[in-house]
Image (cartoon, rainbow, N blue to C red; front, side, top):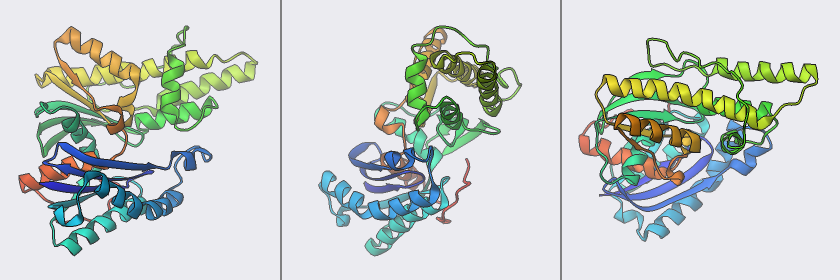
Length: 331
């Protein structure tokens, strides 16, 4: 089965062609990072307009790269949420129009589920059940994946997503957007440890909170500036990042132990962070568990993961007929 997939939930316009949910024939991504860099974050209206400009070009490139025509497509899919409403509408409208013109089935995909499915592309042997940690600029979820379409939500952020916290701390340090990769790099050079809080780490639940940690970093920086003291950016980055890592580790492995799971899947843009990967690998060795995370190009938003999710949804027969854009769609 050949699946045509479209992703346009934020600032990447992506179209992919997949075969049977795991074999990627093409995965073309047009990113808007350079456009939004000067604003220090994504501007929704600008993102929507750029999706409109890019979608047809990216679609043609994806079909050409896959060496297929629209008549070869068996299933069409697009992200229906969560995300920026204007951006979602571009990809969703394009996908539904193509499906109608071809008289082919259409599946609207939950972007969060798509991130989980990125690992099916990277690891042919990976199958549910497992524990999933979705960490990105807009989302932080801790879930139990019982099968390809059956998810149990155990915890989520109560305020800022982890990637959002990275970007806000980076901005407060005068670093460029997106802040995550820069913090990751500078943290490697940090020497001194600053005592930032591990918010909710001991709470008897699996929820997260990163707003308090972000505020603690801002207060530290403001105090230093008011006193005229030097700020060692590398130390701040290292200490902030370790506070994030400690909380993610504690909650994820606690849930894995509770559910007697030996597989943990990381996904989302922040799963590209080298320190998070290293820490999870080290902890997994101690506890005799296996860690999975997608190759770097599949960590950030892309259509291949959407196509994989669409394939398994369609094969399960659990297709949601309400394929409208939902910016607040959850699990």
